[in-house]
Length: 80
Image 1 (cartoon, rainbow, N blue to C red):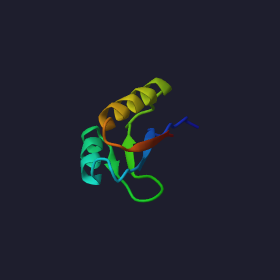
Image 2: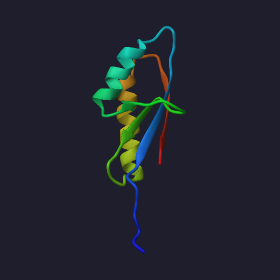
Image 3: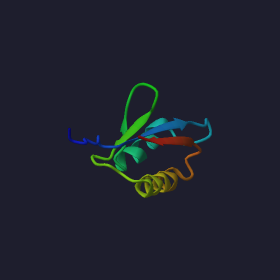
Image 4: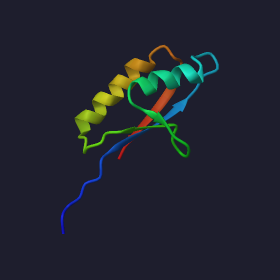
């Protein structure tokens, strides 16, 4: 039986601050990175389209941090 690996995904949860950027501005910034909004337990998902490694996930986390800097939001990433 062949070993089939599913493409990895990074799920993102955002906690907004009433003194921070608008929901639409944060969404625009994340979508420009390749995230898409989803319904359910997470707010956004990034589909790698491949098997990503830990270094890839860390680099994406740093890019999210830089993209959201100054927005007044907190975030949580989960790559599976």
